[in-house]
Image 1 (cartoon, rainbow, N blue to C red):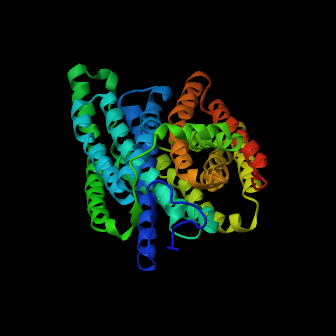
Image 2 (cartoon, rainbow, N blue to C red):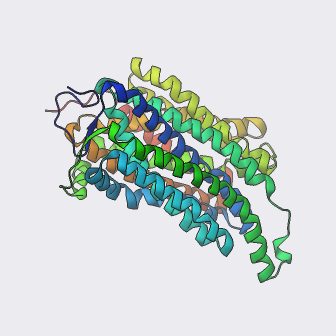
Image 3 (cartoon, rainbow, N blue to C red):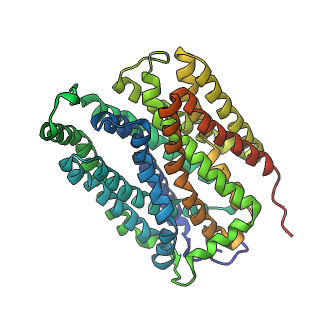
Length: 430
């Protein structure tokens, strides 16, 4: 049996395996993909306050950044799975990376226009590429090793995702938030306002042009190494058949929790800068608050490296339930306290977020057998929660304030707690 091919199962559509000589290099490639799409996604937390000030947006309007970005998961995930089935993992990864490159380059006309909607379009195209890459990365890392350690391996790979989300926001805060000019936009006429927005947008453009160059280089490297993975492609089968899996209660509940988890994680990350700037929290300036965002994502990185070990010795369901409960408590503490306690309890949520995605993913996918690839595609659709929950949080912030808006992600974490307890025992199938 070739390494990477699950024992006792038929090859899934677009199944793949690698020989011993290529296994390590392919794992490094997948870890790099997790680092890249995690880092670029986390830059949204830095762009939101930039665009909010630049276009004088409400919290709900600013959260449209996340809605435009994560809507791509809803629209692109299943077509991406079809591309994998037709062309294979490595070639599809190149498609995703080139789509990401195109999205980065779209920031050039977006800045020239000085119109908020054009930034949303650029973010959607960028996210479409990230969606394709993630549809490739999640199942591929599970194939590159023994099936028994797939959960721990995915958690370890997610740690590299968190490494990206730790590094990128810090650099982004310096490049993007540190240069915002202090101009009273109310004193500018229409022409002057458009010129001001176009000029200030250039700092965003320069950041994404650099990313476009890096992504193009990675795409070339992946293409040159595409034959290291032995793949079995199949153009047959309907992508819509995956929805039959929702008839299975455990999978359906798990997919819902992916929706809730991504939504809660993104919602908290999106308000960190504005939350820490409040005078009754830490009272920081915009750039200083932006530099705290990596602490939120860095907690997830540390937790995932530790979680890869903890999940080998403890019930994943119980660990998930504990993490969901702690996250809800931290939100309550942050909402009802002031000063350092309020700020740091919000940032600490990153640590307990760490094991949630890979644990929910593996618990939901348990027992799917040869339909695991279909389940992976459908779970990626559920990542659209990152488009909806932050928008709900933004509306709550506009109506009742940032502190009260924390109730939205708190409800999400409580439902994740319930799923962890529900799935605490191994699934028994007839």
